Length: 152
Image (tube, rainbow, N blue to C red; front, side, top):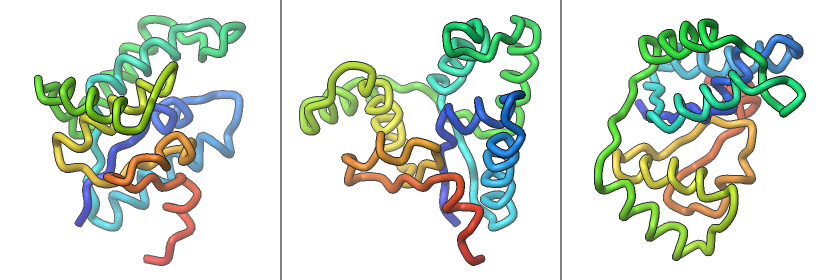
C-alpha cells in the first residue's frame, strides 16, 4: 500500500471546534486511509506549524488553544502518525524545488514539505489545499473529500 503525508491543515481541521463537518471530513479521510491499509506520516514541520496555528489567537486566524491543549494534541499526533525525520538532504531538495518551480513567499513552506516527501519517497499528500501542491509533478495531492468519496 501507499504512504500518505497528512498536510498540516488536515491535522488542524481534525481539532477545529467551530466546524463539525470539516472536522469530521478530516478525521474520516485519515480513517479511510488506515482502513485501506495505507500508512500516514507527518514531518516535524507539520508539528511546528500545528503548534503555531493552534496557539495563535482566533483573532489572528488561529485556533486559540492553550499551550497545554496544544501539547496534548501534539503528543497524540506523534503517537498516531509515523513522524519521519529531518535530514540534511531535505534542504538541498527544497532549494532544487523552489528554484525549479519558481516558488516564493508563503508557498516555500509547502515546497519544504514536498522536499521532505521526495527525500523519504512519499508520493501522496492528503490536504484541503490541493492547489498549493499541483505544481509538483513528483507527488500527487488529494483532497480529503476525494479520499472519503473514492471507491475502495
